[in-house]
Every structure is written in structure tokens, then in C-alpha cells.
Length: 218
Image (cartoon, rainbow, N blue to C red; front, side):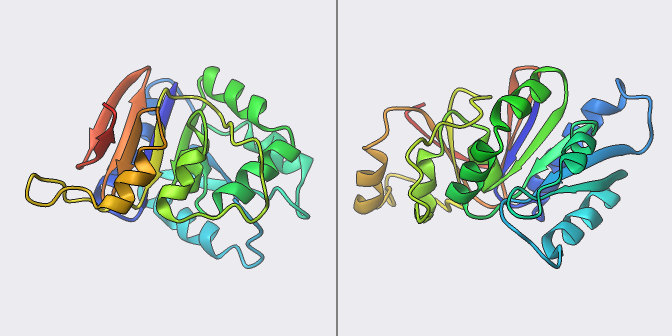
């Protein structure tokens, strides 16, 4: 599988992870440029974030051309086009709402099979958490379960959890704060605490870290 998990695509390491993921596809894909699809975490009527992301992929030599919305604007035609892309980006946003919408459309097994079959996935913030076994780590970066989602199980494409936007400067002189340590203590599974300018890249089960992440229970 080819996966990128990041907090912010507009940082140096965020862009480097996306570039490296796309480069891993170049040798096995005949079409040029690579075609990328985008799943919105929630409605974006003006497609503001989609257009910003489209420019980002253009600088990487790829074409972001398929937009899929999961709520009222859902289109089966767009889904079919999405699954024909070389890579799919799972956007940032409300993690609980995003996962609930994916479950309601029964898309978790579809996306999991897409990745197993060789399609690349880029997860940004909420999208990255959805690529892991569970989005339980969303509470660590301040997400609130306003939609009362009970089943937090997600794509399970990696064997750890992911918490984006966690800026930590951990040392003996400056350890984790007591409240944050108490939050972490509730987790028995390994978690990557990822600052904005960091990312993870997993190509065919080889995990590479770009930038400085902090691992809980490594």
C-alpha cells in the first residue's frame, strides 16, 4: 500500500510526503499526469479547499480533477470517477462528521480495497486519522464528537493511531504537560503525535518519518 499521513499539506514536509507518494506511482502508471481525487470531509459549496488543493497538486505535476461530497451533494458518478484515480486525498475537517458520512455511504471497505489494490491515499489531518484503526485520537487535537458517533473504527490501514497538529517540545527540562499526559494515559495503542511540519510516508509497508514526530508507547 502507498499511504501518506500528514497534518498540513502546505508545510515543507507535508508537501515532501505528497511528492514522494506521487513519485512512487510514476514508475507503475502509464498515464501522465497522475490523476488525483478528493473526498470532502463536509460540504464545501464554494469548493474553496478543493481549489487550494488543486493548485498544490499542480505544482507536484498531478491533476486533481475529481471532487466527491458525502452528504447532500453525493454523486455515484463522482464516486466511480474517484475510484479510477491514481491517488485519493481524504481532506481535513471534522473527523467525527467525516467518518460518520463515510460509514453512511458504506465507503470504508471500498476505500480499504482501493488501497490494497494499489491506489494511493493521502490523509490530511482528519483524513489521516481515518486511515488508522480508530479516530479515538481526535480528542487529542480538540475535536468534539458533536454528531454522537459511537463506532470510531476506521480504515485500519496502519497499526497505530495518529494525532495531527500536536506541537510538542519534549525534553527532560520540558516534559509533556500533566493534563495532556492524563489524556494520553487513556490510550493503550501506539499513537503518532504529529506537528504541522511533519508527515508519515508508508510505501509497501516501509514507514518513513519526515520531520519530528513524538510517539506515545513506541
